[in-house]
Length: 121
Image (cartoon, rainbow, N blue to C red; front, side, top):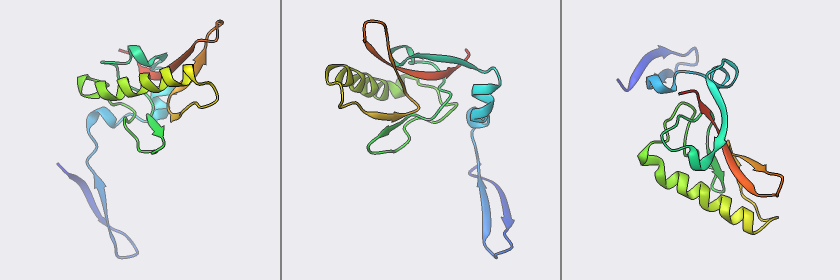
């Protein structure tokens, strides 16, 4: 099931639509705007949850999790990595990381927390 469709493009090139696993067929707009997204939760609570947006630490800028992907046990290292960056950012203000898909929240005491959007369980 690697290829779902082959069509000839007017330029003479063959266009191939890759197979998309069922867990990735919902669009981000559907996840965030269609009532499927629960909202943001702390990264420390994201294990075994399904993310609603890409998680892209920068640098290097390589997507580590895609919308609709479950942060299961195989993603534990990624969760720990984000928590390490959260800890670093809280200890060294002004030297924070840029993580696409991860929101930074400060509470009334100024404590920093990384948050991600997840899908309703």
